[in-house]
Length: 334
Ligand code: GTR
Image (cartoon, rainbow, N blue to C red; front, side, top):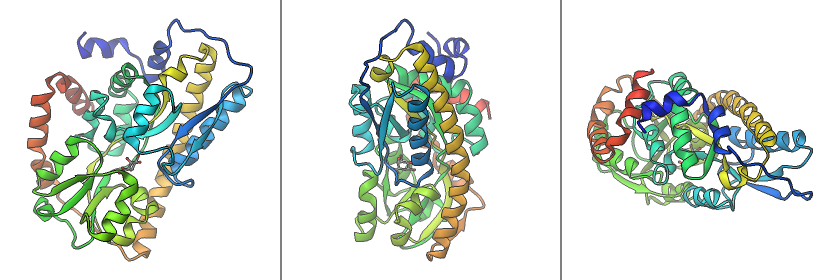
């Protein structure tokens, strides 16, 4: 079926997630097990607070039929591993960045294309509309039910030796990226050496010079203390990648439609909370890194960075022609 036909059939992700469960009615165990929630961030991070609120809300509204615990700080493993665990039902719910999901869910790669979103409000608009519904549909096919899109701001470069003002400044630098070939291509297009690496290993790698830099949004740059060991923060804002609040389809399918509705509503509320907390944390993080000695430089003209990404798009679309309509849908709706 053509994507455009599909999208017409989809309302928002709310409607989508209900279709995932079509026809599945189950009874509950009297003794509900504790669901396991995966999270990579520290406890006071906006996403962590929203996840804790989410599962507490679900437990209250289902009278404890569905309850659980969030394991913060990546103690349940790295993000690529956790994505597999969610697909298998060994982890029941999670907050994932869509960046490392591309290897499993091809539709998510579209939002990992540099500069695909013009702004954060544009990202919201797309993800809360047909673009988000198409991505959620791709995820559902792979056993992951998306019930909300979290804000993850814009990612910018940080380096230990010098600021980045033009793509040429990336030349020769060893830059950590999230696990996805698209990000390797992005760094190579600027002449840098990309090193895919788990989030938890970045601090030590920056500190010991295994890499010269990395890239992330202000809250992650700050909460991981990466800013202490890479003190040039260059606001390239080259990636705006949303995150999901998602449920293992294996777990989802054990719930009644009424409980799925409760979970969906709690997901919506948690998403609204995360987005609000995010705005405040971004500001606080920028203040904290500046106070910690970070030299922040804005990049007035992002044109050269955007131009450098031409080959990344060409290569991606040549290898994934079926994604062209989704790329077009996203770019045309901003
Ligand atoms: C953060 C994101 C994490 C993880 C991390 C990374 O911004 O919230 O899920 O993807 O970046 O760089 O690995």
